[in-house]
Image (cartoon, rainbow, N blue to C red; front, side, top):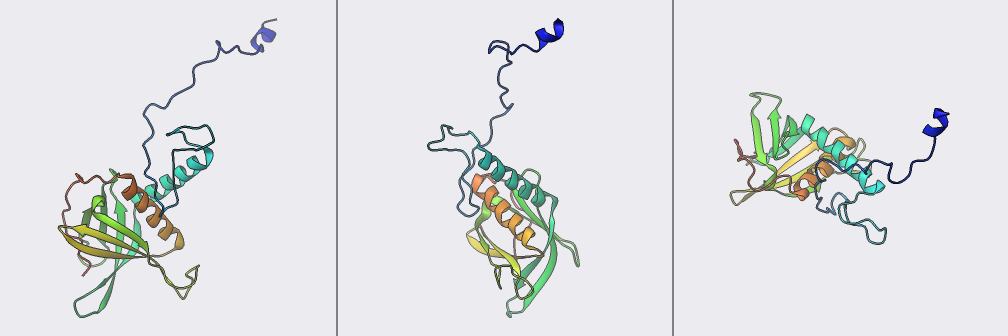
Length: 195
């Protein structure tokens, strides 16, 4: 019967060729800061560029972080003026869709938009205080050091939750380490002053 003929096992010549991705996967720079090392496997038989299950999980997690950064997050921007007075501004921080620029917009006052190329980020440091959970006695903060025109500036970003902190720390570290922000990135429209 024809039904039985359809159930016969496929021979190797009957199988369609393995699908290949339309575009090659990007090469990922390993980053100790975010604990990733996609690509190379030593004894597992996989070559450079092959993604294992664990690597795929890491990649998907980083992708989720980057997408959160593109959507934007309300954070507090801490600055200290020349008299030593601390100022906290509510700003919405985001990464542009082309993954080359860090933007933030003041949510109070003029609503001024600030932009800096990600290529100017030289260090990202978890600056949280308090217990490991940074409960009521602590805060979730990130210090992002920028170097532009020979001067260094630090953006002190205070996150509302540990999830925001992880997304910004891991996502930003990944983008900077992977070279998504090339040195030829578009110039900033505004300085990254925090004072």
